[in-house]
Image (cartoon, rainbow, N blue to C red):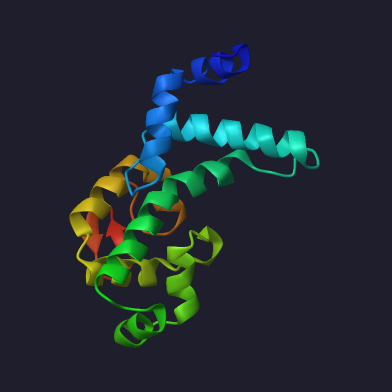
Amino acid sequence: MSPRQGQASASHGLTVAAAARLAAKLKGHRILNTDEVAFLSDATLQFLRRNLAGDVFSGSAIEESFRFDALAKLCSARREAKGLSVPQLSVLLKVPQYRLKAVDQGRLREVDPTVLRKYVDYLGVEPWFRRWARQNRELVVRLGLVEGGRGGRPNKQRGFRGRD
């Protein structure tokens, strides 16, 4: 292990072996824990800043991308497993294709919470989605999937709402 690897890993409590397991996790649609997301976002941000101009990249945007990636991969894989193309699902759900593509491709700025909810419901991944939402609470709030400040029960229109 090089000193540089040890430093990057140690700052978030990840060993090189844990980083290797993390790389394997990224190939699927597994939910990353907080340390894994922090490690990946810091390493990515350092790489981008070292190789591109200055401070133009937001660490929180990179972190959110890593958090959303598992959901994007799951949705895309489940849609494909059902034998549906984006245009076909767009017609079934009565939503624009570009909104479904935004979810599949992890383009957070374009994700519409109502479309995401329809997508998750149609794919039948609600239990997995609830687990992901609990693990990624801040992102869920920022995406507009939570109406209240607490809780996590499904809301048909917006995705999740606070507890009454």
